[in-house]
Amino acid sequence: MKGSLIIVGFFVLGTLCGVSHLIPFDIAETNISYYALCALMFSVGLSVGNDPQTLKNFRSLNPRLVFLPVMTILGTLAGSAAVSLILTHRSVTDCLAVGSGFAYYSLSSIFITEYKGAELGTIALLANIGREILTLLAAPLLVRWFGNLAPISAGGATTMDTTLPIITRTAGEKFVVVSIFHGFVVDFSVPFLVTLFCSI
Image (tube, helix red, strand yellow):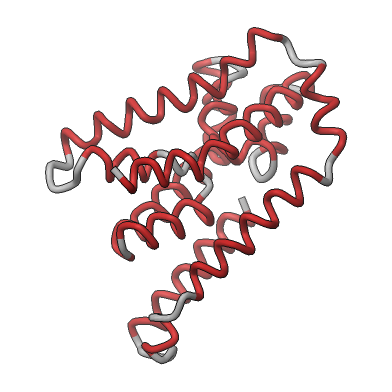
């Protein structure tokens, strides 16, 4: 929760700096977001490859739970497509690109900004931060109303890092491996799905 609020605070700070022209405009036009994206992708690969315990955890996973991240991805994309029927000024592919962030706001918003512009990138950032914050706040209610797998599915790509503690506390220790596996698979799908829908 604290981490999400810090991210929102930096977003608000950046917005205020942009509105008040504290940062020169020519800096904003450089390829800094591209280099930040490259550094971010390198960091993601490093963190996944540097944790041998992750692969060991996957081996002990119930085979039926392999389908949980697949259903999370399909459910999110179906919901995003349905939202495009309400937001008629946005195309289906725009809504699918935003939904494909799966709460991985730092990566997806940079991709979408590169492909579709700052406006949709900002929408993606807010939508994906909102998904993470909602999971952090509503995890106990999700477990009570929909079962132990609900906060894992709601957390999207964040279930192996930021939302893992609240999922462990509300769903139980036995869902830690499921949560890590789910986050890993959904996390891995983000750059592929976002770029796919941005390029259609």
